[in-house]
Length: 207
Image (cartoon, rainbow, N blue to C red; front, side):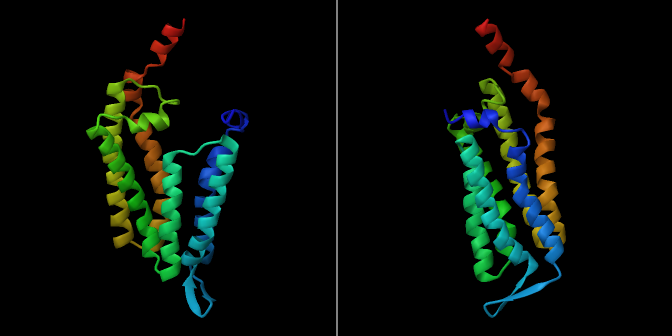
């Protein structure tokens, strides 16, 4: 029963809910980056203000997504928790570095989880993507190993960018660079997915 709303949901709603808060943060930051705001006797930059806006926006979009689909992935839950924690620290301490470190923590955790699964010979990724990417066991192992390295690479890239470049550069990287990198990664794995797909075998077995 919980899957029925997801089947009826228009295809543009899910990506809109997932990317909407990120794009709103980018647009708000561009508009407010040269402004400072005096709140309760303390000065806050436009970045900090938009961080305070982004947290409830992400929480709301995640809640709406859960109500529409009846489920959330572990990745979505972990992302929301880390956004609340690191975003909260950014606002509380008035220090944008904590929010900039958030993607590093997310990708390190995802990479570590996949690495743990490989060590335990368990496919955690298949639990999340198995319905949309039916692969055999060898395919999942190869994809998870590559994705583990990819996540660790993203963590290193985020650290390098926020520590050595401007806030403008980091915001653009966070808004556009990371999603493009994720899309490019999955496109580059199309050959592996085709070689290890079990979709044809499942169809033959059904017939």
